[in-house]
Length: 360
Image (tube, rainbow, N blue to C red):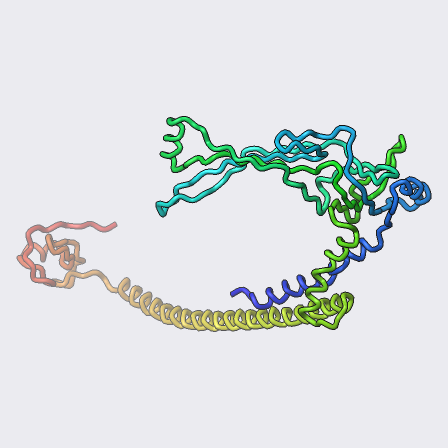
């Protein structure tokens, strides 16, 4: 049986350790990020901080683009547009009822080069779709009812389906939206400044301010601290997580060691019992072999004695027996004596035929 108690304690200890290690860490990283109040200061900051690159900063501004996308359904102008189409239908289940379900038919995304502008300068944002915290606004939701033919509807019904229609959703990042971006600042050869995902560090694109992001990241640490020990601060709660993880680890290792000890003792008893059984079986087989040897010696002596005694006829005791009686099969008389017999002298069965045998 697997030691589930010990494994559960060890896994819980690992979870507490990771929680204590990561609790408030991202918030501390965001607190240490360089804040750029005006985008025009970012170029000068890059020039002065060129020796300590990469430079992770946080900037705020409104979304803008030289070539925005005109949304077909909502009429908005955006820089990132996602369109999805879902087929909604009723499906006949095994219980005999109809349940509603959907399947994705189309998923398409468009993005154009865009930037943040605060009135003093603009900075391009690269790779925002893979950033944390990016939420697109729902521009439009349309539901188109199914208009299939009678034949197609009948075929779908025979397959256990009833088509309801297609739901088309359009999500947009509109121009003019205020955003906060945390990422690595870089400048290309022609002097264009951009914010991109750093090789190591946070990358956020969010509608919230930097202070709201920090407060949101530290929320879980404060919430757990309030449940465990309300008077502890974040650092003390992190230490408490580590102490608790050590305690769970020790208890889990104890349970695993206890299970391993019992398993080793059981296997030891099993092998000792098996050794005893094999020894007893070997001893008994040795006694049986000695008895068989004695029997073999006695048998060989009797065989030798039989070989020393001649095969004489039971009637005359002078000639060797060489005649077989049919049908009983006994051979105990010589030919001369057998000619005068009508019944076998051993079994008293009538003799129907006499067969003479010859020896080498």
